[in-house]
Length: 216
Ligand SMILES: N[C@@H](CCC(=O)N[C@@H](CS)C(=O)NCC(=O)O)C(=O)O
Image (tube, rainbow, N blue to C red; front, side, top):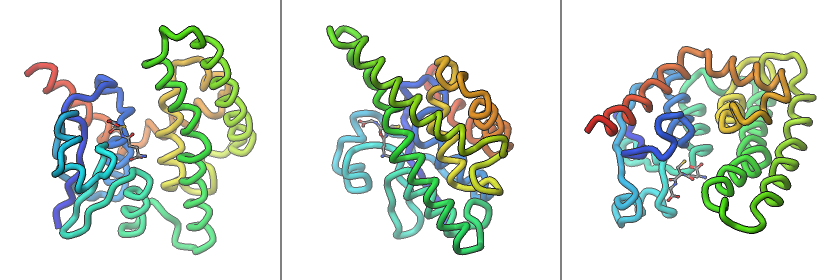
C-alpha cells in the first residue's frame, strides 16, 4: 500500500530540514519504506480536505490505505510498530524507546520550539530579551540532564531507536545557536544522527522540494 505524507510546499525554514515532515521522512528511510509526498500550501493546510486529516491544520500527515494519522510522534511510532529498525523487539527496551520518544517531544522540544517562535514572532516586544533568556535557561536545564544521561554512549538506550530519531530531530533546531555546542557529547550525538544514510536521504529529499519551489 502506498504511503503518502504531507509537507510544506515551501518550507519557512528554507530547506534546513527543521519542519516536522523531516522526522517522518527519516523514519521511513530508516525502515526502507518508499513514500510519496503531497505538498500543501499554508492556505490548503487550513482548508476542509486537509483539516479532515490534521484537525489543527498542520503538517505532517500520514496516509496508508484507509489509515490516516497526524502528529509526527504518533506517525514515527506507527512506522516503528509496523516495520523493523526503529523499535527494539524486547518489550522492556521497546517501552524505554517509547519513553525517550515522549521525552523528546514533551520535555525537550517544548522550550526549544518556544525559543524559535519567540525569535520569529516577538523580536519587537519590550520583553523579548528577558523571555529569550528565560527560555534559554530552560533549554540548558534540559540539556545538562540529557548530556549527563547520554554520557559517552552513542545512543540514549543501546541501539539507535525512534527515541534517538526524535531526540536528534528536536536538538537539530539548536544547531549553530551556540547552546547545543556547550554540550560536546550532545553535539556529537546530533552529528551521529545526521551521518546516518537514512537521515541524509530524507534531508536531500526535503531540500529538493525547497530548491524546486525556489526555482519555480
Ligand atoms: N505536534 C505536531 C506539530 C505539527 C506542526 O507544528 N507542524 C508545523 C510545521 S513543523 C506546521 O504545520 N505549522 C503551520 C501551522 O501551524 O499553521 C506534530 O508533531 O506533528
